Length: 55
Image (cartoon, rainbow, N blue to C red; front, side):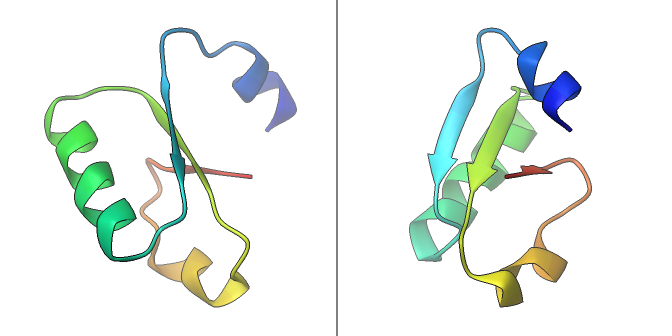
C-alpha cells in the first residue's frame, strides 16, 4: 500500500467517509479521478469500495 500511495500524483484526499465523504467519493469515481480516503472508524472499512485506497 505504501508503494501504491507513494506513486500517486495529482490526486484528492477525502478526510472521512461519512455523509459528505460518500458523496464526494461517488463524484470522484464518476469523474474517474484518483483519490485516497482517510478514515479511522474500522466499521466503515467494509463498505468502502475496492477502488478506494484505505489508510
